[in-house]
Image (cartoon, rainbow, N blue to C red; front, side, top):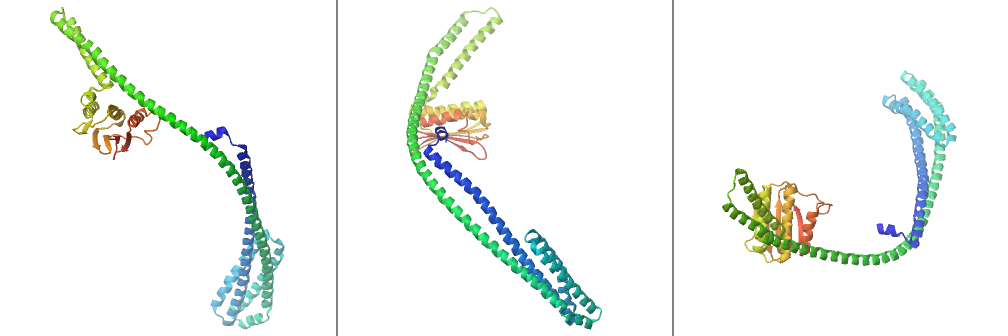
Amino acid sequence: MRQLLREGFDRRVLLPLLAAIALVVSAFFVAEARRDHTGELSEIVQHRQDRMRELAELIYVCIEAESAQRGYLLTGEAKYAEPYDQGRALAPIRIASLLESFSGRNAEELDTLRAVQSGIQENFAQMDETLQLMRAGRPREALAAVKTDVGLYQMRKIRDELEALRTREGARIYESLVEWREATRLNSLINLATTAFTLGLLILVGLLATREVRRREAANEQLDQLVRQRTADLQELSSHMLRIGELEKSALARELHDELGGLLVAIRMDLSQLRRRIVLPDEDAQTRWARVNDALAAGVELKRRVIEELRPTLLDNLGLVAALRWQVEQSTALGRLQLEVDLPEEEPELGDDTEIAIFRSVQEALSNILKHARATRVKLSMRHSGQGLCVTIEDDGVGLPADATTKAGSHGLKQMSFRMQAVGGRMRLEPVLPHGVRTILEVPP
């Protein structure tokens, strides 16, 4: 990606791509505007359908109240008066809701609604008088008032006005639906044209980009080949440096053993002979003589440890199994750790490079355990099969983070992995439950 940004886009790809982006952005805003318009039309249709429902409910309430009033006058039973009372309470609510709804849109219908409201109030007032006469025990007067048909004509007039209003509202709904369909069809045409044009530009961009990608793939392939070649050269150089380093350590160890070791042993022998022939005059001279002798002994021991660190003599003299056993015993004794060893009696047949790679990797693993693991137990095991040799170092410490082998600073683990790769093997890390790490070193047969 950085290389693409650094090199930049080809103009033949960039210009159509920018045009396609501009078209898509413009189409998005147009589509949003058209969608808002269509949404407004949908809200208008929904609002008018709600008004149609409220008009129908108002007509039903008025008719139901009138029927209940007549039923009560004819039968005198109170159950007929209950629907009337409900209609008497609901009618003002319905007409008030309609007035509020029409005040926002189609305010020209407000005069009609106010006239209907006045008529409903007058009609309910007349029906209230007849019910009061009935409840006062004057049924004949109540029936006579009903037979005048004044209330019937009044209710018919109210119903006709509401039906006319519903018809006009239905016409408005139809007009809104037609407008909504036209807007939807226009949206579809705009989207279709935008999509077709965008697809054409994208196809053109795709063709140009494909050509550019192929060119860059060819360049990347050449670069990959160069990187692989350089990586192989570096790995070969690193392996060579490891071998040279081990050879130099071995040569230095021999020189220290032969030269420095011979000098220190000769000095100790000469001092021992001088001590037998020289009588020290006082206690201070004896103390200094003893201090010199102890310093020489410490130097001999230091020389031995340095030689073992540079090139373990056990590895050359007794083999890998003995060298690993000595190394793990020394390390666990230094860290006061419990040790469990499971090593074979027979020495595996391995090359010198493989033996030193395994030994150094085990040495590094033990060093990591002592420095970082806070473990109490270490187990070293070795298995040899037809698939190769497997050496395992296991501890019960705090474990390793997930990025332990990749994060900056983990040179020891990376060096172990590289050592094993240099001899054709590999290193793996596995968690140990409930806590701890298992380091596995595998080499082919």
